[in-house]
Length: 393
Image 1 (tube, rainbow, N blue to C red):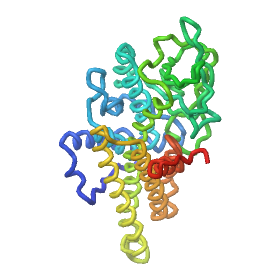
Image 2: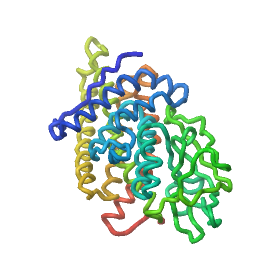
Image 3: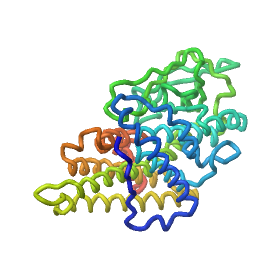
């Protein structure tokens, strides 16, 4: 394995806008990725296995619930710190960032925000420490962009609920200890349910044959008359707004994470262009390669500014769903285009596992779809600026 020589681009001196704590958190995550992720990730991607040995390290750098208060096991950090951690982890691999995003924004966030004190005390410290892993069940085989159409349901049986249905495309499902699942009650109201591994009728078959996120564990959640104790219902919020609130947090993390993937592709292409000699000179000395590299850096810089300002708004409690959608859509689109351009800089070498670019490119094909597709985020912004939702047209 080649040494990880990554150097992050900061063309507009954005580090000057970060606090000493931000820099400390970011640099710790960056060093951990170089030490623990880069040496193993290509092998896991080739073999389509998730590196479970890194879970402890993710917990140690505060990647699980970094903004959760310390009394629940979190790091008590702000939203910019959360974004920076996601950026560094996705610089290593989108699948590893997915694991951290799900744990933080889709499992710990709803338990902290919508759960009661007993649920917070029971689950959050173990989730923060990586002693317990979680997943999030919203997407169904027939309901992706339209989650309100879900058919997974709970029925009140007096002293417990019965849960039936299925979810798919669930990151962390094959090894998760708990699942935060969204289901409709008899009145058609969406409720959050904590399902624990080992409950009779609950299974998590793994999804195989993926060309993307190959170092991430993906699966289904199957519920067949699963008995859910009443204390496992999230009591503080219901309706579709509850899971969408979780997705806002996750999409925010993705907006930062995609920058990491783009930075890695750019850094790889720049380094290669300086070293690759053709026609008696480095290809970095040619106009076309400079055009590619200059445009990559410009788009990364714009995305960095977008994410930083969004982080400020998140810290102030002012970030809207539409603003988060804009950043997620723009930054992932930016990253996947940079991955494709960077691959061309490397020529044939760009498709090999010796370099990270093709792995990033394949991963980003999933990232541009999950947590809201590229087109849906466009329509979220469109509805916000026009006042006319076009989702069903």
